[in-house]
Length: 197
Image 1 (cartoon, rainbow, N blue to C red):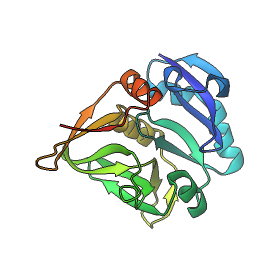
Image 2 (cartoon, one colour):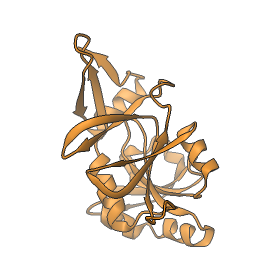
Image 3 (cartoon, rainbow, N blue to C red):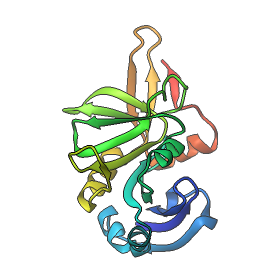
Image 4 (spheres, one colour):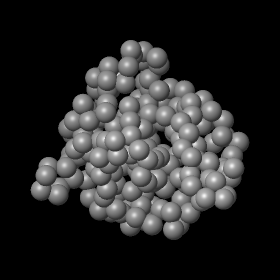
């Protein structure tokens, strides 16, 4: 699979994802082949160098209808708010041990696009609206970067974009995984991510 290191305007730093998931090809700094996401992370030396030189932390960013990507951010409240576009909420997902999710606490109220579902024992219990930052914690409440294993775990958990179908009768939401290619078509054609049954 072909991966690319690219410059992300959102995080203002170097980032990594599959080349097919990058909309602005002019932002690509380097492309390479890798067997899997873990191998790609190992190969992304520029990102690790940037983290070491600038004091940023390694995180995953998850946007609506997109593949998660490895990047780095400054670890401060202002940066979190800027990325999620509002006040932050730190939540955990029982199926993702040791990984915190930083998101917009009023994402649904603000009608931000539904992004991904959260599960407990593989049962959906909530849906996050808006951009999500996946980070670690030091068990004293301090946000820290993800380890390589956590980057891979978070990537695999949120790898596939999701489509949400609302039942107009019961008000329930059906969650459907979709391919990255289908999500890209939806995004390029401005097709809403929520539909009614």
